[in-house]
Length: 114
Image 1 (tube, helix red, strand yellow):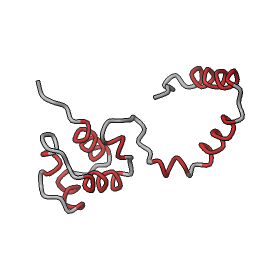
Image 2 (cartoon, one colour):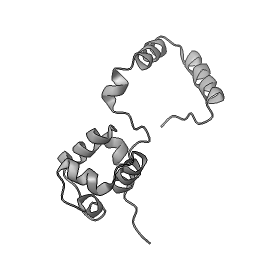
Image 3 (cartoon, one colour):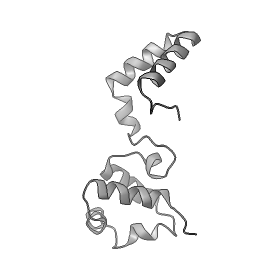
């Protein structure tokens, strides 16, 4: 059975989605040809993973398979809607929070807490 590597799988998927050939992507980042595919068997440097995440505009956690949220923390922290929701949440009672979460689940069937 072949080992699935979330890092390599997600990089390949994002490059495909953005119509970027992986060889062009590697060249753009200054990587040797085939480096990303070799990450199936070896661990990349933190700097290289960060370069990839920044270029694809996703979080490192997303690339590593730790979350399904692609957004970087900076994007979320500077989103006025997210900030307003957080402020509202801070003033809610546990019952109000429960009601809000139920409303989100009803309104958005794909909504789930990670």
